[in-house]
Image 1: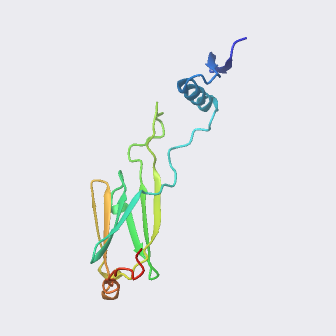
Image 2: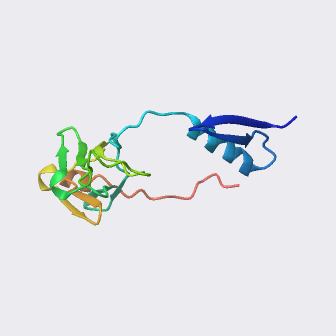
Image 3: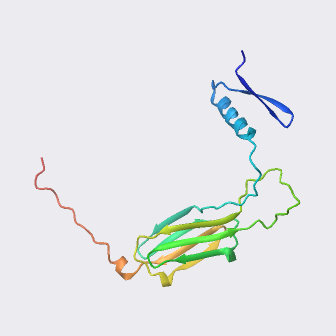
Length: 162
């Protein structure tokens, strides 16, 4: 008896091994199973969250967001008084045409939105943003109160050392 799975896809017949003697066979099986399922064809418009990095130094908090393919004019930034930075934008498909079928596309289009809590006392009125090469950088200065919150603690040798 053969260990295989037979399926028909558009008139073609495939034998897919179902044993997992090597990692490659299992990966092939999963790949074939994925492609056997007939998903409805969506346009590639979905909601996305940009990947971010939040860093700080003595005077600023900087939020950097990856936003490739987004035009600068389509980016909207908002900072709420309770310390939430919201980055939103629309990644538009400028080359889309209704009469054109794609052979293969992994490019996603749609709304990009992310809200980041900022747990510092910041001077929101002096926030500044720059966008270059698909990276959005938002720099927000720390308030004078936040800058004074760090206190040096001295470490003393314990009296009961054994």
